Length: 564
Ligand code: UDP
Image (cartoon, rainbow, N blue to C red; front, side):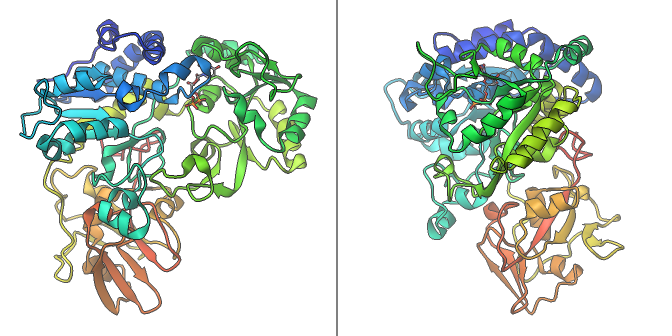
């Protein structure tokens, strides 16, 4: 069946159920964004033309909202607790619905079981039963619940599951045996899924799929109004919980800021002003989302204190014409040195509170400075007050961008098909690429037939031998490209090393998330033995990694030029 775009979301609002504070928050958001979704659907429909889109039957099981997993977020919705997850789930539901797919939504174990067809009274059905869904979107909590209650079907159908995973799961943590042997074991990882089945909030590592969310968009009239209505000396502090104000050394930089600007906060409080928030700060208390947006429209500056990491609010601030000022982290924060990331299945290092804002947006919208350096901080404030900055929203965070990206995933990502070419070791077939004319990298041979069905299409592959100690994520970005893990199998051969003129004295095939790679001392080349361990993330000074890169669409890093 062909999927047809939907622009009336009232049936979706019914499907979302009611009761919980979290669901109420999500439904309000969906309702408020209806016109924006409808317009985006219209535009995307036009852009895609007559392309065929399969209608899928989709189950969305939001595990963290189930009583069985403790539902710790719902009671905190009105108290300054995290809202980012709810923003994202609301937008995922809207996306799937607007794209025209068949949708079921569950937020309890009972509903999950009845939708999966588990017979009542049978906690765990030992038989494999047919699964009435082509795709299941869930989170780590939901994944655990499905494993417990689907019996053998779980194994059979796990390739249809997509895991919404805010901060991402790197391949080294995902592979059970490898994680256990090499100290990458955490409470969350070790599911042996295809790493692309994990979907993140920001494009952290291309090993996972970038899901994202949307920010509210402004029309031209609103943009004009904002330009005229900005108070150049008004700052809003990022953070809803009083605890962020406990930051050491904040008095110094807040003192500087207070010399120039009127400081506003949206910190939740019960009856009295939270003692952590200084008296000179105008605290509005936690605001409903639309009122928070209004506040941002008036403000010139949105300032981060270092926590929360990587939330939606800075994108909203920038979309409403604010400059986002944030602290540089030196040394970077990671699961090695920060409690928040401890036990999360990633080794990623954050060089600032919001790396996406820093690296994908940057000046004039985003300033990343050393808060301990008063001169640098003060100079930034002064410069920001002088600059006129227009509202900005990256395409990938617009409704159209999110619809486009998820459309492409749904139509092209298939983790149930047999795995690609398995590393063949010594007797590698000729690989279909050649050394580029400038002899720095490999590219797809023009006369080679492009691997049928491969997505992204293999002809967008370009491969480099990275500098020692450089991760493939960075090696590709250095060249204005993005690492593409699905291309690793093409590179995992002696032939690829040979064509790149790497002097291998010996070639070994082992399990290591940094392979394929070349080690200078000993002139050894290493191939990857375990396809699940192909990883863009990861580096060691011992290795020059062999890195597959591809191009990407401007403002839509998840998709290559020919990916639509
Ligand atoms: N937000 C809100 N009221 C406020 C402050 C923020 O509704 O007073 C919303 C904001 O619009 C954003 C969401 O909270 O979409 C999540 O923001 P944040 O970046 O703080 O991420 P979190 O830590 O909550 O996941």
